[in-house]
Length: 107
Image (cartoon, rainbow, N blue to C red; front, top):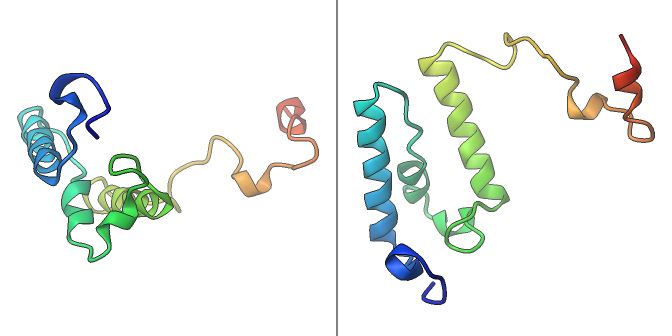
């Protein structure tokens, strides 16, 4: 928004976001690394604005879109799946709510 400072004086627009996303894709290609194009994934959605809380930061729905796309890329491009990756830490649901420190005392 116009009340923010810094380069561009905080002007948020779809055109700026698209230009930034394209620059990120070019940088990833130049570095020969993967790029998760969330701009394209979200802009294709009819309700894409619901993916953002304030025009910049992800909402719960935006986080889900990012997670789903990241997991898809991990499976497609890296041949990784959550079912085959080793777990180094307990799942959140397995942490005792009343005494989470018990996990630290286990050997």
